[in-house]
Image 1 (cartoon, one colour):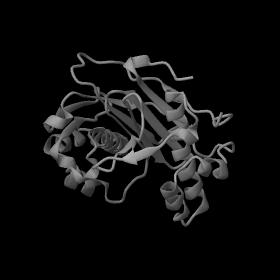
Image 2 (image 1 turned 90 degrees about the horizontal axis):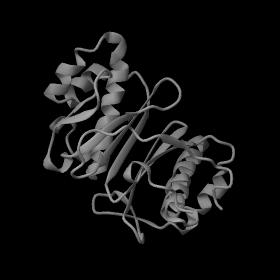
Image 3 (image 1 turned 45 degrees about the vertical axis):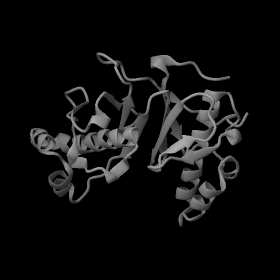
Image 4 (image 1 turned 30 degrees about the vertical axis):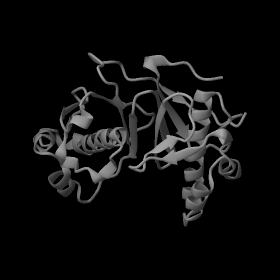
Length: 243
């Protein structure tokens, strides 16, 4: 049965990639040959297993949305390399992000969507990355953060930026300092300035369980006025997922 459409057709799912029910052999069976080949190139078994689980869950979630079995979902990539449904009867847009043992999948009817998830790290060159990749507006904002908020602020900035780029389909080929977002924890995330392709993006920072994670969602809904609450994050269940 196809899922309902809260928030005008915007859904977010959280996936546990280390769930014992996410068996690698079953996950591999619903993927295409190219995905299985990419999985086989991972040198470490846990990375291979998580890759298989993330991409199998994506097919399961798309199947749930369309009323199809996961192995009946065919994907292609567009000119920018963004995955698309190969033969969808309705305009379903989606995006996947995974980090460590967790994945997030965003699904939207009609409107482009981008999602990003990051496990925190403390990069040795964090300050150099701020100087190199932040826009002038963002640098000024970053230096107003107390020291204890800077690691969180950096990852909140990173996920918001990635979500914007993924929603517009351009990826990291577009310069990170060519647009600006409000990323400080005390303010609502929003686009401050950027190219016409990003105008109208709605941004959210998402709450995910556990400390040391950041996640963000960007949704391109033309003409949307005001602000909307962030969509609830649903938990994906691996039990019976191939039915």
